[in-house]
Image 1: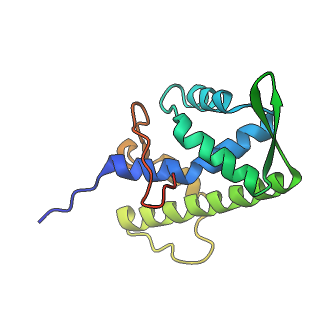
Image 2: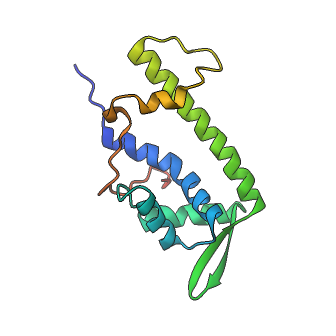
Image 3: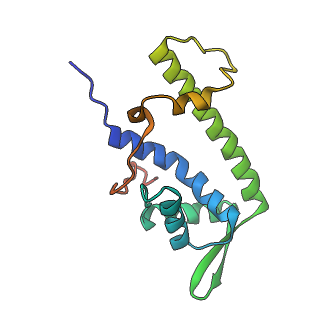
Length: 155
């Protein structure tokens, strides 16, 4: 029996894992509010992904409760700014995402090309190797995606 991979679900999981990082990175660029974050993601993704308010605002609340960002009411909107703790957290997340991408690249290379890159360091060009994989292996179409949560209500 052939195993069917749900590409849509896989792309949703990838988006969820990166959204907190993306939101914090946008706020680091300039103080902003939730709607601007949604529009910035849409713009930077060339219209391929427009996260819903239902995914952005809970992340903002969580980041604020953990002290990574702070908000100020300006003209009836909550404007978010990053805190020093948020900058440190963003740097840590950036390193974790880089490690994740490198690990994904090692796995893809090992499976598709039979390379044994199981050493701790992997290849120096691991991230670039992901870009050379067939488009279907890494191209998630984020247009018209429903906002989904797991059993705990997390995005």
